[in-house]
Amino acid sequence: MERIIQQTDYDALSSKICALQFNYLPPNKGTLSESIDDTLQCLYSDIKSLHFEYYKTLKEKSRNVYGKINKLMRNPFPVMNYGTYLRTLAIDVSLIKYIENFPKDQPFQIVNLGSGSDLRFIQYLKMYGGRIKRFVDLDFKDAIILKQSILKDSTNLDQSIRSFEGKYVILQGDLKDVEGTLQQLKQYLDPKLPTVFITECVLCYMTENDSKQLISTIMDTFATGFWISYDPIGGADVNDKFGTIMKRNLMDSRNLEMPTLLIYNSKLNYPQRWENEKSQIDIKDMWNFLSEAISDTEKRRLRSLQFLDEIEELKIMQSHYVILNTAWD
Amino acid sequence: MMKIDRTITLLKQGKHITEEAVYSLCLKAQELLMTEANVTHVDTPVTICGDIHGQLHDLLTLFGKSGGVEKTRYIFLGDFVDRGFYSLESFLLLICYKLKYPDRITLIRGNHETRQITKVYGFYDEIMRKYGNSNVWRYCCEVFDYLSLGAIINNNIFCVHGGLSPDVSTIDEIRAIDRKQEVPHEGAMCDLLWSDPDDVEKWSLSPRGAGFVFGQNEVNQFLHTNNVELIARAHQLVMEGYKEMFDGGLVTVWSAPNYCYRCGNVAAVLRIEDDLQRNYTIFDAVQPQDGVGNAIIPTKKSQMDYFL
Image (cartoon, rainbow over all chains, first blue to last red; front, side, top):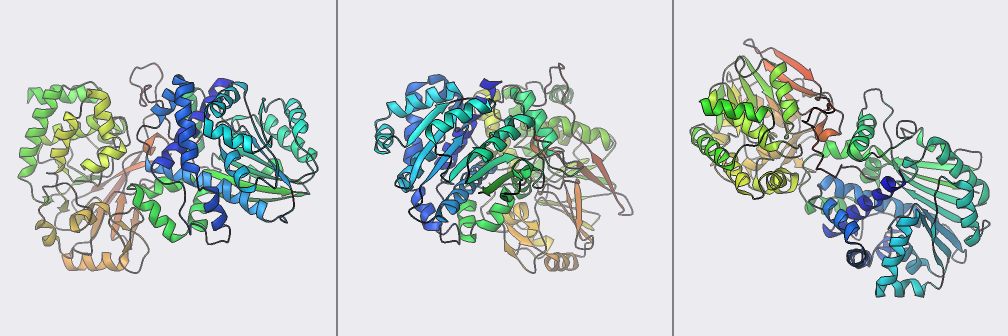
């Protein structure tokens, strides 16, 4: 099971590289009407070279993984590139908005749970380095070993990490083991500082109990925090079969389980695990995000990249993925 | 004829057709389609079918539920290929039926029946996977260039894949198009295959990047000018299989159930009776069967289109 879940990281990485190759990412200037648009531009300034460098080094480190990712990248449908664009952007917009709320002298920490090969730590440490106390990536042992060896082997990436002077910490762990995870985090993090937790397609692979445990323990331990979570939702309408079919397809094609897809199946049900008297919750689906947050000029740019053959399909897919933001203190 | 029957049997089982056989079928299909008008006349009763998208198993259900080509007249509104895993088999089956029963089946071109779109959306890759070279894809694309642009039932119902064009006010103007070419990026031929209806006041830009969005005004104008009562089109996924708009002046028919094996929609076909009454038949996707050896989603396909 661990290996099957871990392989979903190859899907995430291949999707991101595709979205970069097809120029969906980075977003253009003027994507958001809000003032953080400039910050977003800055965050994405070298996202391409960063990922291509990682991918190039991966080829040298593991032919096997490179082959798998390369295979996944063959001819991505535009709907997939749109979705990767929206997912990436939605998480960064949430994160930047939270950070920009702080006074400039407020230090904070970021934890990417189930980070896989995500390279946000470089983007954020470069931009907010002075203010970030720690950036932690945590994932299964094998994923971390591969990521570490790639980061070390690439002169460019290794140099970046050195310039972060120990602020970047990469940890092996299993999120199911909540106690163990917490012990590890406590070694490197100050529970009194504001801390952002990111779970990007991570909770969907955990059981109801494990994910509940993880969330409540973290919210109890860290006094001030912000949680950003991106996941699929199965759909709550009786006629909505998206989740049932998704569960079956993923089980049949790769033995991948999504235990809570039909439990936390709507924008109403998904936030349940974070709900308490201290938390404020905001949740949108990715179709809302595309329609409401992205400017018309940027939508026109996206349209020009590939012919999108079916809008309704994009809508169905994207209304089954959500981004949740929860702040607590 | 014997040969076509054999090919039909093989196709229904999803079995391999040799490159030579495809070549000869495509050549015959071209010769036949060449003689057809841009807008074909069709008599009632007739069954109108929307997008198929390579979902062979569901196409077989469609024929099963609607009488079959031996007994029923059909109009297919295009988008035979791409997205599903059996584009070739689906398209060739329709071509075989067309050759065997030329008066009983009308094939209209969809926006996916082009070289450019099939390279992005799966048909080209499917051919490379099945044959190791692109010859068969090229033969099929040449047939695409000869497909009709529309049909007219009893001079009363206009059928087209996408919708209307600001460059077209009369059906006669469609008849004047030189259709034997790759679908252009703009102009009347492009719009007929790409446009969509919506609640808009006037012609608007399409979010698809080709064609236009048109509203009730444009539809009423077209119906009145051409003295027809209905525009039947496909092109847009409808979760319920069909959707009538503009006081019944336009209908979208969608015939690919559980589109892309993940959308969870039902499909429909629309039968037009002699008195022009509309009868819809709804059908569901074929359920995958274990251990039958005709897996609907080929196991070789490692990629499922979800965000993980």
